[in-house]
Figure 1 (cartoon, one colour):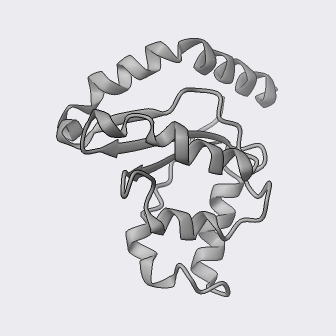
Figure 2 (cartoon, one colour):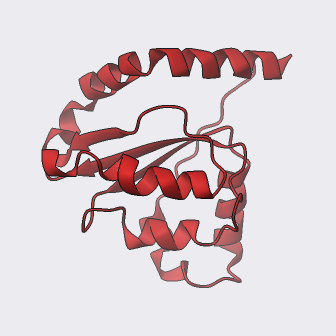
Length: 143
């Protein structure tokens, strides 16, 4: 299998450009996400949902603009009251954009940000079958 390129798009770096539909930087970022094999779409919980910055960025896509991208919704929040936020708010938006969302979303309390490894490991174990299927499909696609 070839090299895996990882890229982080931090919307805070382009916040002032998010509503400029003709912005070349954002057009390139949108294209990069739309052509990704796998994308982790992450946001803190804000007013029981994802942030306005993420919404503004994703609003730049037409319906099915993320067709074929495997997306994993991830959100942090103040506590257990926000546990369903990624599945209730972010997942439907990603599906509307055509992304494939084969796993449960990952939610973690912001207070545990420094202890992510065991939380991610537990999430990966819960989603082991879906992740293994994705890895198998990726190997088939590479042939």
